[in-house]
Length: 296
Image 1 (cartoon, rainbow, N blue to C red):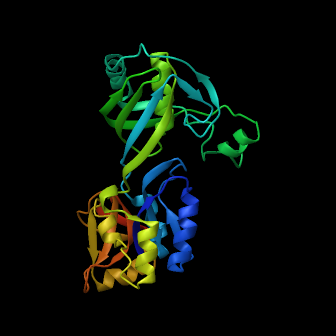
Image 2 (cartoon, rainbow, N blue to C red; image 1 turned 90 degrees about the horizontal axis):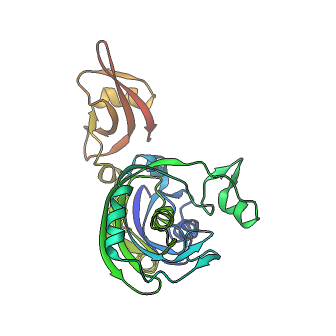
């Protein structure tokens, strides 16, 4: 098997749980995921099967989430899975106040990941250290938030905001909820999260674990997405038979007028077939194609 699977991760399972289940279902050792989803989140979890796991870093980086942010509550994990640090009545908070602050989170911003995250510090995951009672000073990172769209507002002692977030890789929606609450002076935590888009895949086209089990049991076609379709956002360079031979030997190719940057490599022979990914750089006499991932 070779390709990508648009899996709908259910609530309460970890991303690793889903990978393990799909490995067993498809009887494939090589299955990987393209971006962790917390157990209390659901939605699109891009999976790669077979040698397509080597192509995971080249999937589109833009992600979209639908988040529920609850104000007046602070937790040590920045979501409802953690211990409550503060809970108070903030019924005075208005949607207008939130609307005034939200634009300050657009664009490239500095963000400190949650203490309970998969980031490694000295070979240990932050969540492992946090559970052991060893909090760390987490370094900030630059992330990009492309768009914030308010979908709903529920007033009360602890108002809730439904927010659609379109962002780049590495953005923590839990940290966004926390920082929004801090900026408003109310405190806030993430109360719900659905990932609607990730890796170029959309929730509407995803398949759940139960549906996948049925597909396998009934020996139906596994809905794997071919790499050339999943990576269609990349410029494509087709190789003839002679260049293919050199490609499979890992040779750099001097070719004219190639698009500079990361490109998808396909074959001119027969049906479209993904041969891998390359990096194109300019040189004095043209452009040079250097193999990054060669798929045999």
